[in-house]
Image 1 (tube, helix red, strand yellow):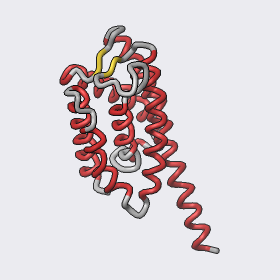
Image 2: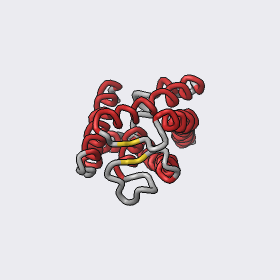
Image 3: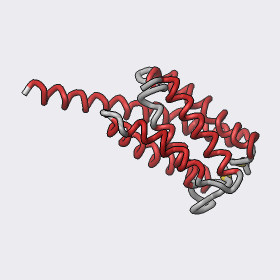
Length: 181
């Protein structure tokens, strides 16, 4: 997978999703995700990305629902509920999962760097979504939101990267076992 394609593809999905959510067109995110995910999932090793997509979407649903339920973050287009992660945020998590084995591969095994990257990158993305298009709001203040995002992502990004490594390792081990038998 071309790293630059992966970076640009993810950013396009992010832009379409955030802009769509802020303009009451939350369907744009899933629509933008379709070709990006399709390219990844149709690859020979696409099932690995499929597992990561499901895991990240589940993890993101829990984390962003926690932010919504505690009033730390308020989401535009809050379907299905204002007290849970909206569908468009879950779309972003799914798209993000498709970077873990590709453009973010360099973070695998570098756990402190991954923690720092998550702790800095996620708050920047949420603040950009808030400032650019008011896709998210911070009812308890930006400092509280940035702290919560930094803490959550400092834990979640290394976890997802470790999952990516584990899935790849198990797949390689199974393939090697079948070849040698």
